Length: 149
Image 1: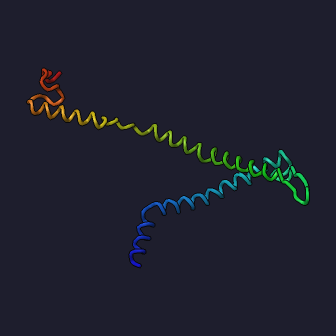
Image 2: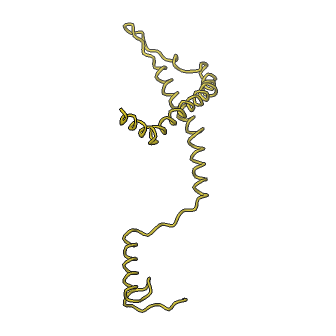
Image 3: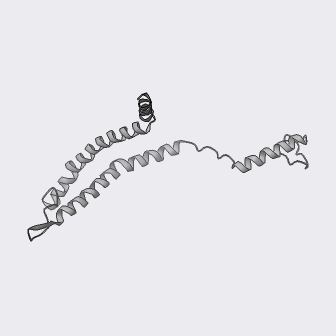
């Protein structure tokens, strides 16, 4: 039983579970913001255009054998998806991308380190030069460049 509790403790404190929990809580809070944008801004705009806050009742096929196809309901769901995606993009994604680009400009890029094979070859060159009594960085067996130039 103690091993199970220790395993659970490691799982919770590992970070993945905490990150997931934070994501769910922020997602729920963000859902309220998106719902407010849709209900307070987008639905009234749709009502101004179509005369109703949604288009779910605009097109019915039937009844045929007691069944009715609600095309407006499908169109309304697609429209709501596009509206929510646009609201998320313009209210959250676009400003976040802009902030990330500004932060990236402020940070100086680190100089690239030489590739591993180049670094190994430089070490071999320096070791050979040291064994030959020459200057590290000069070519072994070749003329040593004068210092200070």
